[in-house]
Amino acid sequence: MKGVALGIVLAIAGLALWLTTEEVENAVISLHKAGLILAIVGAAEALFALLGLAKKTKK
Image 1 (cartoon, rainbow, N blue to C red):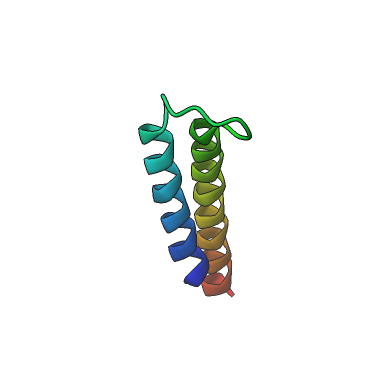
Image 2: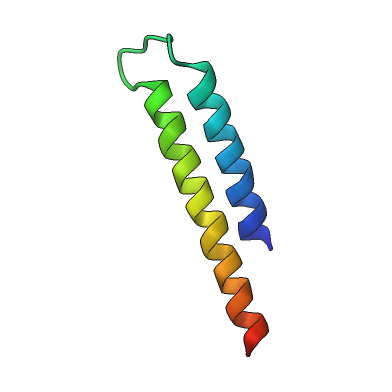
């Protein structure tokens, strides 16, 4: 259950970063792209945690 919560939090934080930093200039990393990657990773983590929970309940 902790993995699902962490994935949802990461996805929401990534979406907020992606939506709010389009015009922000940074010399090292694009915050807009980092937010998109964080959202994707968070959603994938939540999905895999849910699939793991579903496997455990079937046994």
